[in-house]
Image 1 (cartoon, one colour):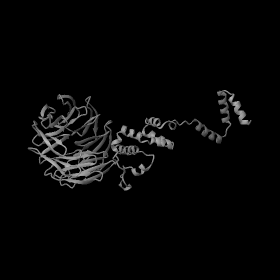
Image 2 (cartoon, one colour):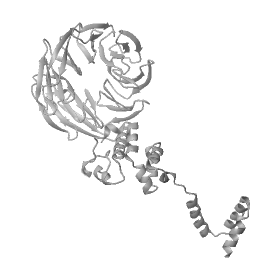
Image 3 (cartoon, one colour):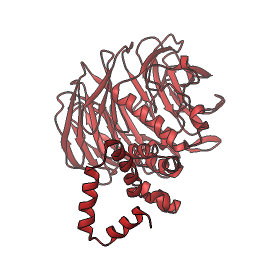
Image 4 (tube, one colour):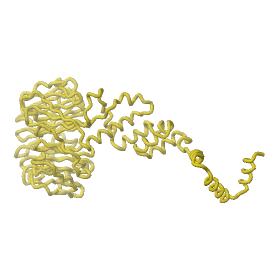
Length: 479
């Protein structure tokens, strides 16, 4: 029997404590080089790879509790972990939890020359050829970069001249398609990816006051008293209807109902049908001064006016004026349906009010602004108001108190938009601000903006502004 075998037999007769003491004494007498070898051997003996030994379904279920950073970290351990951590379903769940599924259409620049400083410097084609990258991981990566650009103020600015002699007076955005209308009656469809005009809409004879882009169609209201419907694909005129008196000053659409406000203080309601001209339902009258704002849904038409009232009209075979709300001491500047089905209004008396539209009851009066309210925006969590006092206020509309007062504008804050976690505001002095709606923190102010701001739209990765100057638009791109 060899000496090592005899030693092992003697060691097996010892207790655990005696074995441990012996091992420690042996380690003390071992040189450094052998200690390093022993450390590697001990590490191998202690390693236990639970994930690799489990069925793939159970392994993926465990990994589904990890965030994106942790998944990326463990994917560097070995090829098996990389394969599991790049599973398409795992990244799809992460995209859903972050709200990133809406950014699937974002494409990477085709060449290095097409990139501006806020764009990633790699191509999606190269990424997708990598066998261990999933589709939804690429979506997550693009979305993360886009969110960082919005938060950190990484963008490029370009100016577009629509070729109009007069200012742009109306615009509407859906997906990557922008439609503009001008004071001189010209109207164009723009592709925002290429920043070029795809179609010119013909037929308007006066100032275009309002444009609505729907699924497959474009609705326009004009000072010549006509509501026109164009094909979004071809730009061809599909139908037009004329009001009895006055020009179109405002228009709202909620399928299947279309409502337009005219300069003679009337509201015309139509029921639209696919492929044919709409059916006239009723003409609503009652306001004694010009109508300033209009809303429509499947049950009612809501209108605000310089006469200080809000009128709520039920839609049916014969529309009736269900409520006349003495809303504001001065004109009603804006109205908005909130997600809890209440109605918010902003007035020239600097007060925001919350109404129960079914009963007409005033629920809350939100005070804080000291000049007229110009714009209202809301989502599931907040109500935001902008004012001529240069401030924006974020409210808790359920409890009726102000959460944040945002101050970084000079002059009137004319435009307000909510997009995800961001609140975008546009005002006089060519200033656009991007805020975090939850914290009220100013994330960045857009510099190099060339134009005064009268109209504001936003897409997934762009802010589009229209100016009172001759036919000029500003495009702020975050991707």
